[in-house]
Image (tube, rainbow, N blue to C red; front, side, top):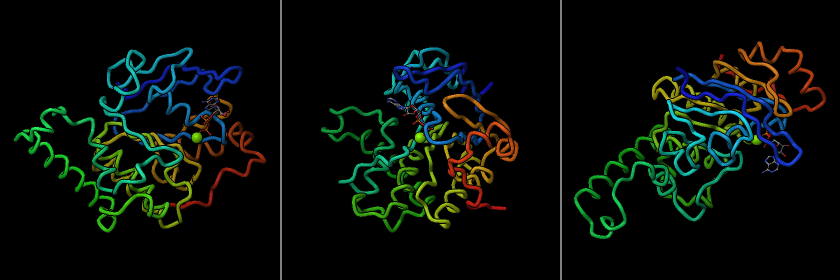
Length: 263
Ligand code: ADP
Ligand code: MG
């Protein structure tokens, strides 16, 4: 059984069909990429999975659950974490504090026991700190752990956002343009991390990305979308050479074939 199953999902914004009858399945342990020109509907697919929007038609199942029966605030608790196209972090907090926010879904002690500092709260606090320290080590964030987000370079913020998602120990990670704005070296690091997230942590990933070098190096299957519709699904090479995909990108200059490659 697939971890995530979207069937015939459609979402309209007024007259605009942002997601048009899209079906996709993501298997346990797979890195699945969504590509397509700007406005294709890629982020909207993430917003459907996150339950920010209700599809007009279709179904979304995750890990045996009907997601449409649940609300956006329940989604992280099921094991779905995400990063955003425009980084969303707490600017006036440290890296460590932002990563601890990622642990929220694992907090079992309520407000009262946080005030009356109980042994359970203490044990839980230690557990969260240990999980976050692991993420800091994994992503090489040691030098930044006590720094305010507001003062950090863009590339480091991108990594912190990935870290916050990882700190929640998700089953499925949604990465919205993880390499956008990154240098060649930073993109290479991102490729290594995504590969380790898949192979060492066993986390499934859906990645929206324009850098076809990164897409080719880490993804198993790739789906191309344009105007909300599926154009093609297959390996990165199959999708890139598909006539409908070439046509959709003609003149946009958006597709990058010169990105990093691990080969
Ligand atoms: P992509 O991520 O592939 O670049 P999006 O999923 O962000 O594209 O957007 C798909 C289409 O839906 C675009 O035409 C966009 O303008 C439109 N859209 C996205 N979100 C909204 C919204 N909240 N309200 C109205 N239109 C939206
Ligand atoms: Mg987008």
